[in-house]
Image (cartoon, rainbow, N blue to C red; front, side, top):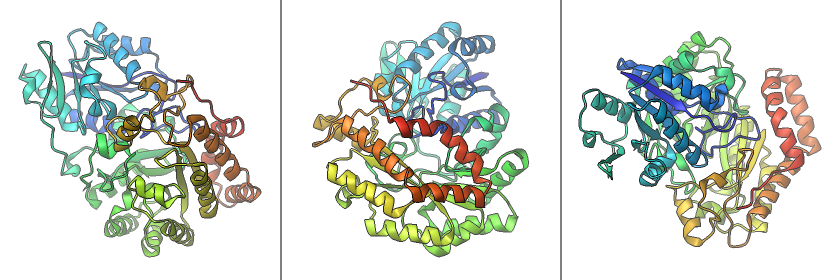
Length: 486
């Protein structure tokens, strides 16, 4: 049976698989990792798979329709996101027109949160998959192959004689080692040079060592709509084996990005992973999402094993706002963490947000001052983006602080993030203005500019990723952001 998996066309370089989908100011483009896992599992079970990432490869809708028409799959799987959902539903309908015998299913965070509403967008959509969908798609493929009963496929919502049926939820995968290496799917279907994250050396390969996140931050979309809060880990041996596969099969790769929600949840595992990398003699730089609280011993061992940098969500300079978002981090611990990271020789990318519940001009000022005091290698300042299925989305909506429910307005006409929330004290324009000014104040400090020049001189491997990021980021740094009126 033929199966076509598609990250559908939309804006060029639209980064649909990331937590806040958009065309990014830094040129960041995420690998379609979750679809790749599903493609690998389907291939492992002897299905004929075609897999296309249209925004990365630059394919137009017409080209995709011709490809699908020639392939004539029995099952079509489309990834979706909140800001692209209307586009994605329309693409689904056109695919069904050229492949009328296909069964068409949508995946992603948005359809997980709003399954019925998503199905109602286009009557040609047959089903949506809710939450983690690897085995949901495999089960669906087997059911279609046998002309079986869709009501037995856990994890889908589907149409049945004019009604929408929501099947029971599928349990999360406990043994992640049974999934094929996602990097092997990249090798077959994708070009790693298409993908970029300024926190890692370029080009890089993105994988994950775990799924789920035990923390309960109100705004974070993956744990609430895709992978859950139940934290599950691959074995260290399995992760290291994939790192070996990457170094052998992607000679051009300069780094691995561990895209776990939080790689550093378990200190003992971080040490075991690092020691295994060292023992195996794997020589490749790697980067990970981390959380404040890691100790010097662990950081040093990770550095020895090739860890170059961490991406860390500091979020706010106000303890009250941190507590309100259930971040469960104290400001003083942030300073300790940064001192420790610098002692260990690790670079930090700091993430900061504006517009969280209780935000004022004063708390935003505190956030900027915190960023300057912490002084990470790079930073991002963004107005908070909220998505259906999260506690944050429900709060803004209930308070009347969500200024539109037209999901296309989550983006500007150019595909950049648009600001769709306000607070008790601040309008969207004030949040955007703060973030633009904060970026300028942070990056245009003379001390920072000299630091960056010195870094590139001392570490020439940093030049390529720094210049690639600057190519798109500089124009936004200088001219500021647009905000689309809602």
